[in-house]
Image (cartoon, rainbow, N blue to C red; front, side, top):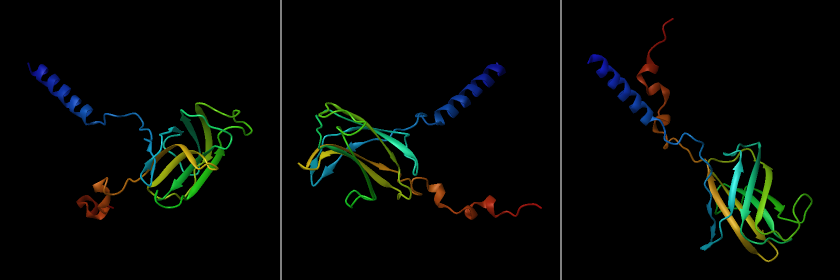
Length: 175
């Protein structure tokens, strides 16, 4: 009988520890949303980044897709913002088709990879916008945006307390 109670107690303790672990142990992917500008919403581009999350100062590949026809004057732009209402901090632009190493124009559906070096010294948080547009005709075919970072001391309340405020930190160390 005692052995059964001990076994049940161990199983319950193990189960409570397992339930305390995060349910999503896999890496979270960056979530992209539609862009809006002056009340206008643009079609959502499919965007994945690799590696995810971005690492400042390292190369990153943006895989972009959209269900539309892109012509010779269309460009793909990746912009880094401190605030989406302000001018971008950094902008990377490439043609969608017709240039060396790219498919012939027109392209439908759009599927391309664009490799950039992520700038260093970006604020926390910062915003990313990925846009496919025809700058000559001033047409936006698709756009996606996301916020990167934003973790603060408010997110982790214990991080806001100085180490000296913990009782154990105020005891002298035995010599």
